[in-house]
Length: 419
Image (cartoon, rainbow, N blue to C red; front, side, top):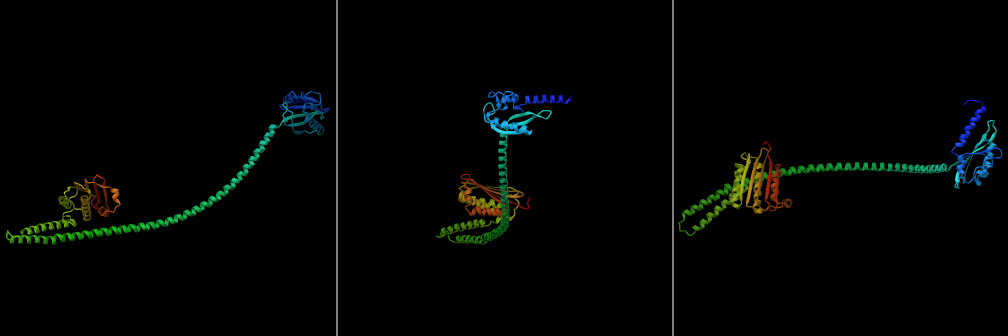
């Protein structure tokens, strides 16, 4: 803005008057002489409402509640004397609704351009919001302090818990190390026990195999002795009895007794033969498993009256290793003996299948059957004997049975070196 100083001051005065009039804050101007009310802006009129009408040219305190007049007069006097702005805080019923609220009176000296004091400008401010903000800030500060204290306590607890956790972890690691050492020692002992058990099992299997071999050798020897010696004696007895019978007259009174002796001798000879076959049939050693089983089952069927059906498949004409032939022969004999003793069957089917890598024996009857699970732990020597013979050769024995459904015995033995 350009022009003379008086024009600039006039322009400034116009600007100041415009700001005074349009200010949202209630404001009044008090003259220096007589403390008369010179100006009051619209915001001030709205503040006091109908309770008091600001009358220009009169004592300015008349526009304010009586409780504040003395205080305001003193405030204006101090500002005029000092030429410095001053603030006054207090509670009063300045508003037209009569509510006691916190107000602030801010007073400034009003100077002429010459430097003389024309009056005092007073601005009235409702500081309720400010106080509420301060209270909220104070509450927030207190909450923040409490939160800080709580956070500090939580940090201390966290440090304590961390220490406890580290101690617990250390103890746990120590305990794990101890348990690991104990388990390692226990595993070592267990492995040793297993190794000793396996060694003992191998020794037991070797002893059982050796015992089976010795038993078969003894059976073979006894069978041959029965066949050769006792058989020859019985044959000689039969010849002698026939010679005596020929030498006696036809009407000799004791001829009937000689016939009884002949029949008894024949029966003894037949039983000796069966016993020899049961112990160790010579046909098993001379011809092999298939002829031996066929011969035995034929005689067994004739003796027991139970029908039999025997068939072989595969490479059955070739001889199997002697331990395999002996084991399968004994298992077959024990199986049909169990049929005779327990099954009440009318027919037994026996099958032998020889494959390049294994031999499979099957004995199946149409008898009463039994609960295999209930009998499994009973320790019946017949079943245990069959299973032991097959297991010694690295095979397996499977028994399938049910009440009223007959019984099937399946023995599988590997044939090493025949693939």
